[in-house]
Image (cartoon, rainbow, N blue to C red; front, side, top):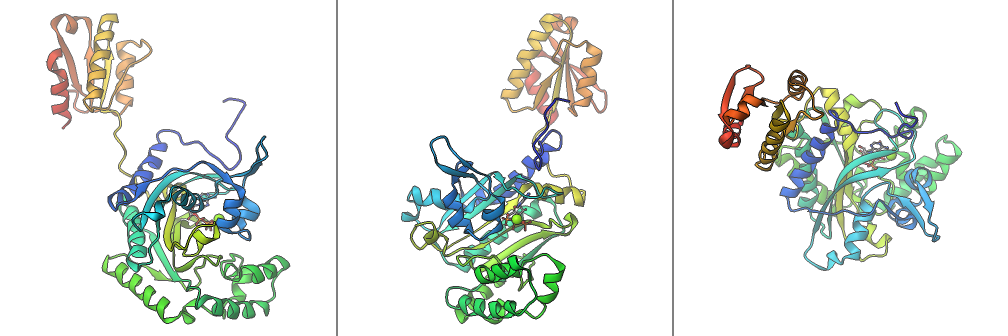
Length: 419
Ligand code: ATP
Ligand code: MG
């Protein structure tokens, strides 16, 4: 062990477990790519002000969880705590919103939050996200939810539940907000929560403490205050999900705290994860663009947590389809055989075969041990006598069967055996 270890709240992805992370990123992004979402990548840090405005100055993320820094040049930056504000900033900066709408984008990367580390909650974590900018259409909300549900399904996860709600819009939400505030002001709450009632009352519904939840039993609900337009919109989203065979549960308490979140809101939860049950979430954010200085741009998106999705796979005992692992392992004996076999390995790899080699000048016995440990299906063994005869031994590692194949046709033969 070295003197150093990964910082608190972080961990390294190491083989073989790291393959699960690749598989999850691939499974989440594949449906998006098929649905016309283009890849976007933004810097790991942005101006603090972007997140203060884009995530919300009163949110836990901004007040407690952001890693901020002042550069030598005096800029106030923050490591990105989430993706939406940056992606919207990038789209506006590139004038994508002046072209065909909606602009559909997906991203994948690392995010940073100064949180209390625990299972499923880290200071450095990984998300795959999707945003559809510039259209208000229930089919677009439904599309995103369906794509996320399909991603979980393709991974083989069975115990993911989808919670769904509508947060109303600029017409009906203010009336509800006032009613909720009046209710909350009558409760026995600590000072910090009372302050939140004034700035961000919907967030109080999300308070995880038992003592608070108990008092919220009779709180007014948004669904009883939705205007006709919001009711109709939400009905359409629900119908489209049902038609697509995506099961959901109405959760009238599901909220996002800020005024620019509107209408559709949803969360994917997994019951095998303990307290950190949310594997992903998202919703419509029709007012966000204006908050960061852009034009009106009604949008919807989600972010799915890669770390928690991997934990969910492990909780269910599901092994995702892994990207190609070693199929062929090459073991030479002698210097000239080594050079020849290394050449063959390179040609095999270039032809698309996943192949590895007994490096480090090990003897035949140790080389075969490595071959067996690699999980390869075939070993290529080349000794001095094979070399003299112009053949290579192709050994099936499961059956032990071995065949001498002319070097000139080895690539073809190996590929045929693997297919
Ligand atoms: P939570 O309520 O668990 O704090 P959140 O509402 O802060 O989640 P979002 O900002 O909606 O989460 O992020 C989307 C997803 O990213 C979450 O559903 C979760 O899977 C993942 N995520 C968020 N914070 C962390 C973290 N600190 N460590 C690991 N994954 C995280
Ligand atoms: Mg959080």
